[in-house]
Image 1 (cartoon, rainbow, N blue to C red):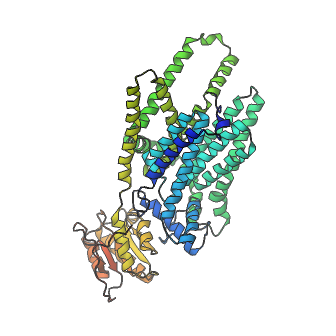
Image 2: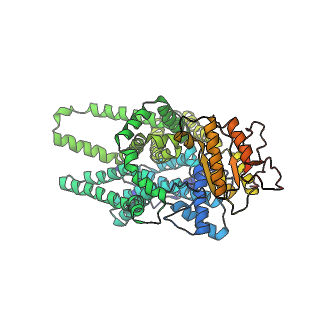
Image 3: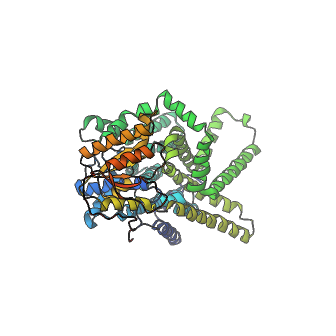
Length: 573
């Protein structure tokens, strides 16, 4: 099918197509409303509560976009532009703080993404491919989970697909307002997360499609120069946020300054390249990213088999067709170039999506550390995968047209029913609530006043505790201390703890939460020091909890009638 053949009818949708898409939209909405009122303590609790904390502080202290604040003193992570929490904080001014607004905003973005996928697939391929692509995005497990979380990823997906969709519309209509919309959406995507640079691949391919329509070298050069110019224009806001603003503004967050100044040392030095090679040389990296993340969670095995099987069959069939013609040596170089250009033009939509998919794979290869640590870094891969999967399903359905009806029906039930079943199974795993955070946060809230600061001894900062306790405070990361003194023993760690207790008292911190963690230096000497310096006010009800786990008063002489709270109740939601 000629690329863009259906562009003029994309806004004139038949009533039957609208009804089918409406049912698909309702399916996606229903899955994303699953557990929407639960606490932000499921699988992605760290990033969700971090984002929710920024939104709450925007509501309480004013919308300082250049210097967003969290409640963990001394810990900042503001590299991304805080547009998503800023939008959510606007709803807080209407109803007060209710974290459900964050998830509902994410769900609204997901519906927009689903609509954009449907329109793009309909103009690239056909209405059937559009229905299949929208249905895949509606039910794929990570597409469901990460578009209902209190995180900026749903907004990032919306801007990304909007940029490609608008640029594709400009390609066919040549209305420059679509070019402006595409550049604006791409700029927002870049400033939200600089990792969106993978969008440069489909962006350039769309301009390449426009250039190959004219048999002129000058037109080709001008068109590709326009591609570079629009990319540079879209990068200007990101450059201002990540580079210029930290260097010229005293209000910018300090972590943004450190992040922008260390980009070269982290990503482009020779040590960074050696680290990438070392990570990719480990079999566990391949198993985790491709065997577990992509094949089980992001795409499911059935969708991966559909893409691989239909792709291999398509390549083999077209290779056989090309060999049936005249010998390749009979054509001149110019004629072979014209044939290749014509072949590309007939299948430009497919190649654009493949470049999109390849761009994401290059991003994963270039930044393996982030992709291994965070599964939502691979989330944008679902967009081209859903579009390709929709066309792949139509391709398989057409190739089985001569089969008996019950065979085709069984194939459809197996694929769509199996994909939905696998998605629901994976979603149950991601939606499990970690009630330990809730219990510890409520205990901190009960044993402290609203304006008092608290301290937490943990392996790393956990914003879940500060967010649900609604307290500001400090964190004592024991692993960081271990990195400072690699040769330390339990006695040295006990001395470190005693010095930290004195420092916290000087800062006026009344409470210390010691979490139950597996760390060899937290043993007898540490417990003795803790009991000499502090008094335990609360401990978990679990019998397996270590004796030092719980909330301790930093003032040994403080008399209190606090009752020991063994297990705070769960929220009534």
